[in-house]
Image (cartoon, rainbow, N blue to C red; front, side):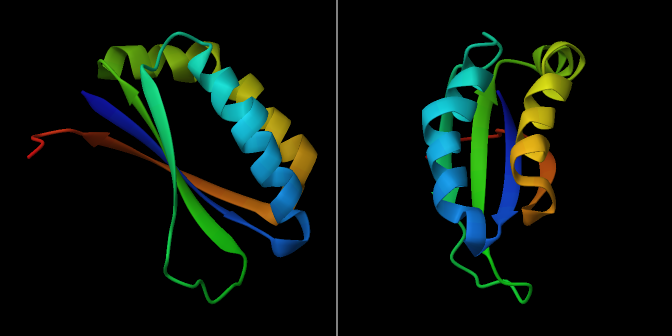
Length: 103
């Protein structure tokens, strides 16, 4: 199992609009690609020096190959929408994680 983790810091001036967009549209759009079986959104509790609020959105997929298909077929379109709506008020970085065990 692969976790595709997207960590986002969002500026307070657009926080409400971004949260609404994430929860009502973007996460659903990512899941609608059919390449992820689930998603969860968590708030990072450490305060950033740059300000804003940081969140981690973790999407679960079956394999690195499926994630690669997402990158090639869906990611550019879905990322562009966020950049178009929030610009530099949204900073994101992505991490790929492999689940080793759950206890």
